[in-house]
Length: 470
View 1 (cartoon, rainbow, N blue to C red):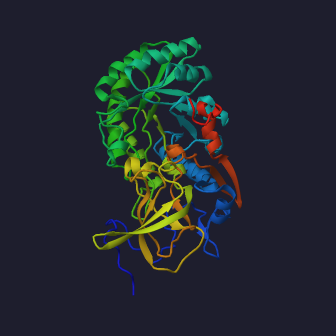
View 2: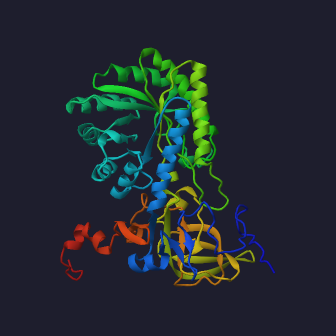
View 3: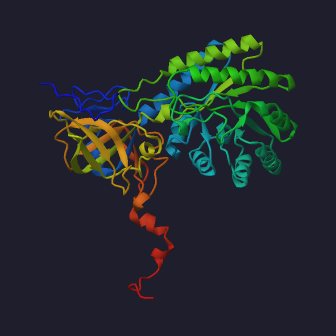
């Protein structure tokens, strides 16, 4: 008899016919199960990865990340060449950045987008040509601006009026004419979580459209600045092209008006392309996005009778998100009665220190057994972290075989973006290592932190103990 769906499950969550299934679109392209039921990533079993590197563990499928970057670039370049212009793609480093990832992205032909002095340092350490870097952020420090202009960062995104003078002065000190963009809010609010939407007026990024002509005039008046175009980012984890199309149309109206006073070679439409985190998600295929965006740019430029600009994009999650899988070890299980219905809490050895997105954004994820397959019927589970917070939930709702037990290895897909980047030391938990898998081998990209690492920053830990006496 087929088991019934648990009434505590959210409406979008279907009862799986097979709780071992690796849903298409959620997992790296190499993900499979071997003859013993173990999850295999990049021809390395999850069991072997956990044995060698411990858990929690971030695993990145290198081939998947590289292929996603190369495919996205090729698709956007082809579609914008079709309309008579070209496209630039910047990998949004905030999604996940390490020196190796920088090398992967540069090898795939992408530029790199950074938004702090630390990210800039990682990009440079990874061998990126500074001219292929974009630097943005709402509060870039004087030190960061000096560093960016000194090393020759390709473009700096000006986010507020006060930055115009700061960037101009930094460029003058370092003997440069600095290419800059001006970040504007198109007024298009992507249909997403409020904390992820970044182009409505009442928020910290960018300036309103009506202020742009005056600020562009100020930029053009600075001898050490070169205005290359407008920049806009309407949000994150966006499905569909409608929001991008409307934003692009509004930006091109402004772009046309600004052309009266000088050339503008580029237009940056940002990123925010969504991915699947659960089997219910249906992200827009990249080719469909590229076609729609190229068509709207062509249509609007023809309507306005202006030259086609070079169009830039800044994707991150859509490149690295699906390439990542997190591994956890089950510590305890506990069935909880909720109004006569049971939900199984499965607690793991990580949590909001390695994936704060569920607590921060209400993000949903999926989960599967990683060290075995099981023929047991599915049971509704909630994967809880080990931290001292009731909101420390890794996976709010999914189905696992009902024989899931302490000691089992679990895998959470689509954790390549914003999980390590947002990781923290809550409850004095060391941040987990990141390993890359490729063709049957695994290597560390970022080593994990030990308690000794954390204590090394605690100056009191270096003092000899006096047994508590004063």
